Amino acid sequence: MKITDLKIIIVGNPWKNWIFIRLLTDEGVEGLGECTGGLDTKAHMGMLEELRDRILGKDPRRIQELLDFLRKTLFLSRGGSAVSGIEMACWDIIGKLSGQPLYQLLGGKARDRIRVYANGWYQGERKPEFFAQAAKKMTDAGYTALKFDPFGKAYKFMTAAEEDLSMNIVSAVREAVGDTVDLMIECHDRFSLSQAIRLAGMLEPYRPFWFETPVLSDNLEKVCEAARRIRIPVIAGERSEDPRDIARLLAMGAIDLVNPEILSVGGILGLLDCFAIARGFDAYVAPHNAQSPYCTAANIHVGITQPNLLIQECFDDSPAEGLDKVLSGYPRVKNGFIEPADTPGIGVILNEEIAKKYPYGDKNFLWMFENDWEKRRGNK
Image 1: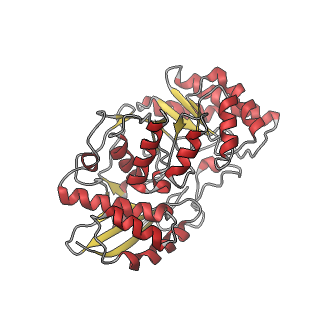
Image 2: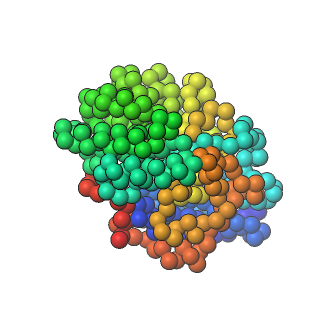
Image 3: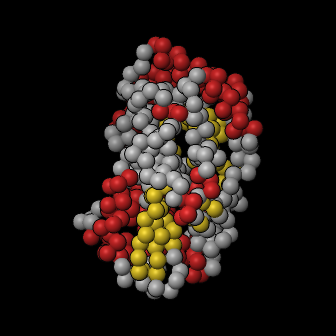
């Protein structure tokens, strides 16, 4: 079997343009992959276009050989989401050839279903009453865990008024959903060490499940210092670009929760490496997942096979209008849990005709340090 073409499809999303690829073969079996970036959509498209000629004629079933070839092609770079998406498309092909869902090829289920937490549900005004109403809608839909960033456009430090508003938002959400729902507080790398410690102390009465990336993620020493001085569990690792970065973080001995991003660490095999590394440090994994439902499906196929999975992030019930029609076949959340489909491969289908209705948008990004980023307006 040989790869005959790589086709790139962009789907405009108000907070992140999705990048998909179709990997075509000479035997008529094709694989779907996702290569979504953040503020660098065209850069990822450019890498995919340059890699296209390099992978033509390669056997998609020989994934390890293909990955080694691509990393050497890129002068020992892991290739980010471009290579991760190609890798996942190859797994999709192998699953279809074998007639097996991906999770069966990875060793089978370690559990029957996965608990998920909702994200992306707070698309509106940064007001306590809005957050409370939006949170209640998600728990009424069956979610038992919610993640949100109450800190507006904060960077490094906050005024007393901004601190009070942030705490009022958390308080309103806690009151709206009750004590049995877990709240994950997202920081998006915003704070100085001292501000992170201060805010974590203020949050303690609301019993957060975790405090996520409170300081700059690539400053591992400061991340671990924050974790040692904050009494709420700290989770980090989403900006890691190599499973070895997860190992370095865990080796410092302050973190036991990590959230690697499947598109950053090398796709299916990269995420499996992260799980294995975490097991070596007696740590748990809650994969980051802020892309399309395709990545939800891929994460679920991996996570269902791993005993040290804690919980899975999911944006799928908070899409922009109409985007839920672009993809089909992906697993749906039921009463706060999710399980993989039994269709061959990753199981997700992209409708290219519908995708054409959602073109690339040059403002389809989250401007995390500007007012009203929570509204996720994109080109609108």
